[in-house]
Structures are given as C-alpha cells and as structure tokens.
Length: 269
Image (tube, rainbow, N blue to C red):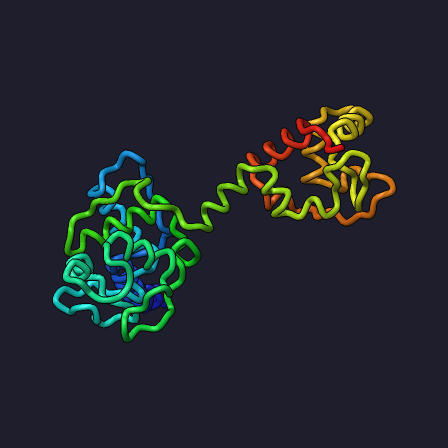
C-alpha cells in the first residue's frame, strides 16, 4: 500500500466521526431567545380577545417566574407569589383582604402590589407598570381580563379601569408646556416676566424672534436649536450651564409643543 493510500485510509474514520457529530448537532432541536413581540391592542377589542392577549403578556413579561397556575392547589401553589389558578373563583367565595370586587382587587394588585399582601407572602412584587414587566395601560387591562378568566369570565374593556397615577402625570406633562417647564426646572434660569433676567435669557417672544433674525433662521428653528443644542451659539453675558440632553429627554411632540408655547405666549408685565 502506498503512503498516499495509507493517508486516505487513516483519514476516513476521522471524517466519518466528524460527519456524525455534524448530523447529531443539526438533529437536536434548535432554539433561540427572541424579545417579546409588542402586542397590538385595540380599544374596540372584547374582554375575551383581551384575555387571550393578556395570557401571552403574563408569560412573556416574567409573571410566572414568581406566580404559578396550579389547579386545585389553592392560593399556595409552589411559587414565590400566590397561585393564580382559579383566582376569580376564590375571590368570589369571599377571600378576606383587599377590595371585595374582583376587578378592583386585580387593579390594586397590579398598581399597588404592596397595599394588600396574601398571608405567607413577602412584599416582593414590583409595580406592574415599572420594570421588569413595564405594562402599558392597554396591556394592564388585557392582563386583568386574563386573570378574570382564571375561574371566571373576563368583563373589562379598555377605558373601564383608571390609569395609574404615574401614567396620568406623564400624559399631562407630555401635553402641557407649563408642566414641562416645571418638571425640567426651566424657570430657575429663564424668566417668564418681561424685563426680568435670571441666569439665562428670558422667555420673551420678541427677544427670541430678534435673536433668530440675527442668525438668519426662523424663530421656530432658533428655539428648537436652543433647546436641543444650546452650545451651537452661546449667548453673550450668560454662563454656560444649559443642559445639553433635552434632545434625548424630550420627544419630538414635546419639543414642538414647547416651541409653539414659547413663541406664542404674551410676556407677563
């Protein structure tokens, strides 16, 4: 046998072993983690439709890391939080503690989980509208319907329950320029009164338009630039203290609202 033939004969077993492992690796079911898909929730959806979406949300957002769904296990189950199986039926039987009405009980459990604790469980559940679950309002309604379906009938539609106070405040700030000025402490440096000068230039529409004209740009562009890029042109006689992250902290809609407000207001005498 020649040296070449011996080499070929010696490599054949190795190739067969390699081929086996390649086949075996591909035979094993392949899985990969993907981030949860955003659930599209319409305001006209029925409670039953919302409950189906709520089931997906409960599984995607980590609720079952602490809660279990174990039929016939009562409230205890095997999780770090109360068992969710038949929760609607259990509340209907008159379980002591928390609001009597099931929907009110579930709303409180999601918005203020520490308000009432089931006996034997610690106060470890985060508010559902904050991380890690970070439920939006419509998602919260869907979860409530799903929990109602566990031993009962879902009945809640979008709009039937109140939004959490934190989301109400955020919505007001997002659409109210005066609230935004307060939240971001704008009036600490910028005066709203005509003729008064604080740390930064006053919010006087006439002065803003004049400065824009000197730059050769529109007043709207000037105010927008002053907010998102305050060091593009540094005003004379004022310290360089304006934060430069408002472009990240404010949405495009909030910025537009602020520009329209500052240019359209009448200075206070």
